[in-house]
Length: 243
Length: 127
Image (cartoon, rainbow over all chains, first blue to last red; front, side, top):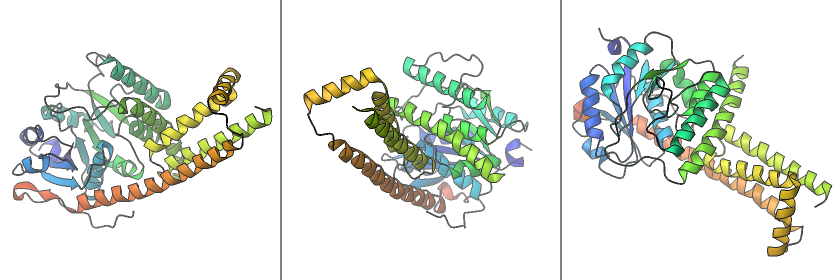
């Protein structure tokens, strides 16, 4: 019996205007992870994303308007929590993640060492090669910030490929996050959850553009830095309330 | 600017900073709006506390736009009012967001007649 059937696993793909790639991604997930349920969160797409998913066998839930990546992930977590799944795997809809690598991630997750496991592009080399300078600086900054706040450095804080354990569903739906990146990791780690990284490779984006605009390159680091600090405060308060 | 003025300004700035940060933490103010107030207030506090910066800003302001000191009070009130308005927008936006999430979760569309996942949500979601 495979690991996916022993544990009920939901693979969730948040999608916003990904008509060009989403069908192929869904088909690859179904081919490589036949035992997992598949959910696509259509985050208010304006293109044909909803239409191209017809006939793919995926379950689609649709936001009536665009809420952003973080909220799309949160919707998936809420869905997984209420439907009683044990694990949630999140994948990007742009085809950069190879579903064939998810099996290894799930096997590592099943070792019981982690509450959340990140598919990491940088954990092996620990160098941000092939990334534009601005983004590389941001990644270094947030990786260091996570290390400073938690004592455990995470090298790929922005990876969209994650395995999220059931035990973390509730905290992830109780507080607000921007993109489920450094701020969510710090919050969970300060609450005592164990977060690890597992090496993966990522393909180049074939269609569409990144979700970060020119303005967001300024706003995103400020927002995330603020939320990281607030995450520490909120986690400390939550722990105090619980005790 | 007098020492009393600097201390008063710094106290008002700190109060605004604490208020805004607490609002963001409690999800009453969207972080995207809050970050403008937080970093704006921090910049203003820096100008207020660092004498060369303060002198430069005061001389530039007096030269470009001579206004009575009383207008600073109006500016402070306006800033607090702006935070209040953004809080109302954030609260409304949060309700719409939660409603949107709830509607999505309650109406999954299985493609190709695949059975929906078991354990469909039944509990109410408070906005």
